[in-house]
Image 1: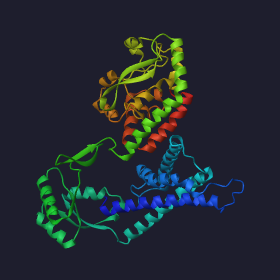
Image 2: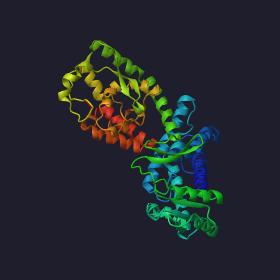
Image 3: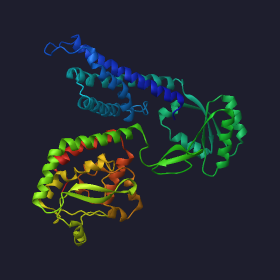
Length: 463
């Protein structure tokens, strides 16, 4: 439950972390510049003004990247391991941003030793701030301070479920001064309770059969100028997460099963396009060599084009290096009896249609690299569920399998780094994709990208 006071507290923590990061960077500079620690073996470093651009990146983007990793979510209930992981992922992205400034803006990191000292000291500063905040906040809550007084009203069984779902720390953050059964008692009792306790918020929890009672309670809160928080669990959803929006002037309760539009998703889009562009530039010599070998070793086009299902099933043309002989698609029906995948997907080991060079391309996943053009064009992402041919999507046996289409498809995914063809059941493949969608974060994307490297280098799970 997040009130305006808690939102302000979050913003203050972000400002504090920005100041801490700036202070740690200056401390790292001072340790080197003024020889506070004996660095006789290292050369003298430039003046502070040469580090200004690094201060700007760290202070402006550090707290934002920490927030994207969930560093400020549930601060009273976090473990040290979780905080360290979030700081590490944010640190990787800051490093990538600094590297991008070096590449694209021709800036230079004046001292690598200052940078490494900052990397070592920054997590200590952030963890210390978080620990101090948590200890102070929990101490005050346990003493009864700052626990917001609220009235809980609605159907008795719904109120019990709501309270039972709160964590111990969340229960400390509110003080339920009165519970009112509005199924049996009139709204006037709620109004009198608001006068009696002078609360700023009423939490309402009703079942779907009590719409009239809910409307009356909201109207009473509106008249009194008191916030009405309505529990949305009267609409049961096993997966979707409820959020709120408006359509014209009509308020809407929105149930989403994919990540909501956020800065993290926008950053993912920027990383996709930038990464695809850099990948195509850096790998262009290798791609040209592969294209030449394909042309010389087998007749037919270099690039294989196929209609694949994109986000929400929208078709797009996907590009791959051709690894099979020309006309291989027309032969698939004859090989259907040898399919080793359970479900609509077709995969067989030692496919006779694959060319000798194509077998090596598939083993190293190099046949997938032209899909960087699809990423650049916005059809795909670097990380996401692998796109399937449109005809395979049309053959899905379960409608629930289409949920893997709810995010943009990617070059690599959890299935790709989990043995690929070792996963023989399409149901298990879908579970991995849904696991990715339900737990998506920039940190998860980074982890999958890092795990993809050995898969490409050693051809793990591919044939």
